[in-house]
Amino acid sequence: MCIRDSHNSCLILLSWEKPREIAALEGENRPCKSLQLNGLGAEAGEIFREKRLAEEEKWSQLIDLYRGNPLWLNIVATMIQDLFGGSVSEFLSYDTLFLGDLECLLHQKCDRLTELEKKVISWLASEAAPVEISKISANLELSPPELLKVVQSLGRRSLIETVKQNGRSHFTIGSVIREYIINET
Image (cartoon, rainbow, N blue to C red; front, side):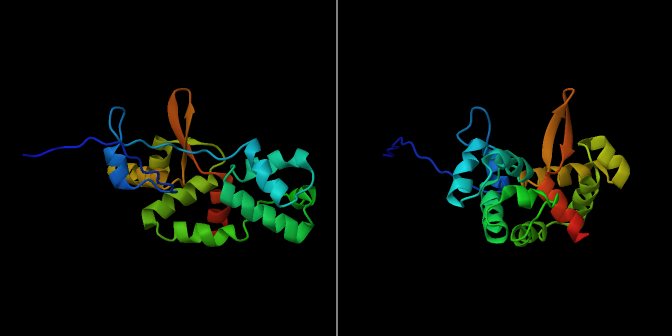
């Protein structure tokens, strides 16, 4: 006789990348769900207070520049404290997106990309506005299967973002990833 016990369990996995196995298991009525976290807003103030950053009215600019990513904000806040005595306005006066210790993290992530993925992300880094998938295909001369595979992979790795415009999907990359890609090429 087989006795089957019912139980509730939960696993929370935090990652920049959605594993293929998870993507295959998720769905509306399926037990596996994913939640895309888009970064901190005003909550990032805790990081800045802890690092004793000045000029609270400038904090939102940092949050926007670094997409609210808590790790990135912590690294940048530490650097602002170390190099600028906590002055956010002095840091922002350089009018550049400083990567510093973020470069190592981004290098690890981007080093695993295929040549086609590097080609697509480099082209997207050169585009100022989000673009439709057909524009990517036309400019890079990729076959539809190649293009779809690459865009899906980059999206799963959180390296490109999907933006809805007029009911259609457009693709872009965030400012930190863009800066890293431009500096690397």
